[in-house]
Image 1 (spheres, rainbow, N blue to C red):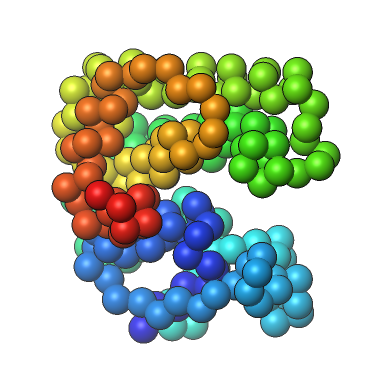
Image 2: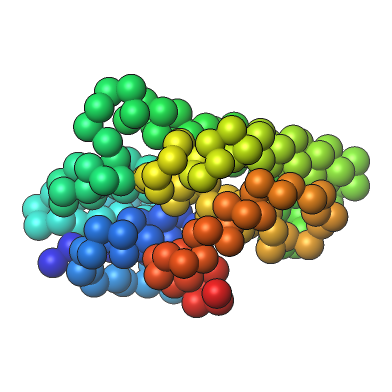
Length: 207
């Protein structure tokens, strides 16, 4: 059975858990990460030299990096309905997955560490305001894309790209800052609320 190493509260672990839910894929999960088993021990570093969650074991195959993992699972377990085989459709999906990992993640970093993690090293008010503004600018990009598709982030159908994007939107909504109104984004999250994987892993059991 597929093994997932990482605590369920981690946004990156939740990507993998949600993908498993969409694929109907059974798994076993072990708690690793802050507050649980330390990831800097030799046992874990042998699996991921970055000492970060998640890591999966699928038989003898070991993989780290959450976006790589969800792509692998969709490719390995008949997930073409999530991750299309057509090169153009797949590239459009990949575009948003990669953008989430690079541009969007970078935008929220300082604000999230300051306002949620309460990091003493991230309490510069000017930097917090700058990060919040940059975060909102990226959320506006998502809102415009959702206005264009009228449905999901990469097009008319739910895809693998919606998993990291929706988790990122949820992080923005749950962070204590001023939230501008984005109607297309709100409607999108309401559409996703019908999916069991969203309820279980994006909203942590909250409809």
